[in-house]
Image (cartoon, rainbow, N blue to C red; front, side, top):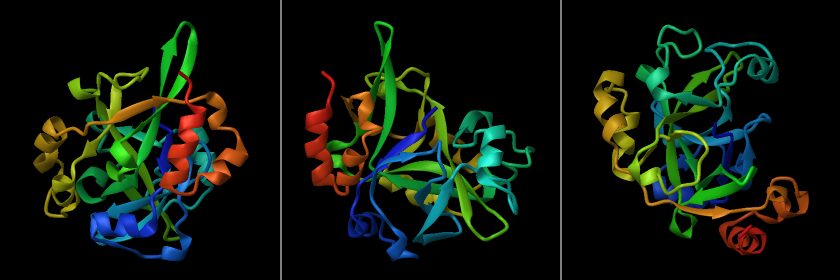
Length: 238
């Protein structure tokens, strides 16, 4: 389960990297920790509008849903969806992989390693905390908001060096595959090869202390990449 992400990127960095503009730039806020256990927004590019960056609630809700987010997530957790196991006949996921794909913009995510009976969180990122995109699916609920789920897939050889309790990893594409994933001309059958054989990133991992998640002062200070790197040097757990 991947339920903590990081996005400390400046707005212009995201727009320049993805050649897209924020639909509501005043609502964007960099966050060192985006915790999916609480209602949180993620930056997304959708197949419906790949030139505009939207905000989507993390945790997929059924199309035209008209009830409480937390109530639904307490019944079934849709923060992560395993791409190989999606039931296309399920009301929540119906047609999403064919018709409502997205890219979730981040510059980090978190895993955990079990060592001598204790869990050690790790932060996973690219060199210089560059942006990357996790593949996802989205739905639009009754009030017009988007909701999304990140797609996970089976771990591959290049992910073996990343500390991780499970056998799964986020489905992450390189930039040259973004357009193919978002194209409305493609259906799931057209993307099977991309999902199975996508080119991997060279991720870095750093252990962090558990209190990194809980210290509000640290959380508030981390508003851009430079702050984040300096704080990480202090709070690594070697």
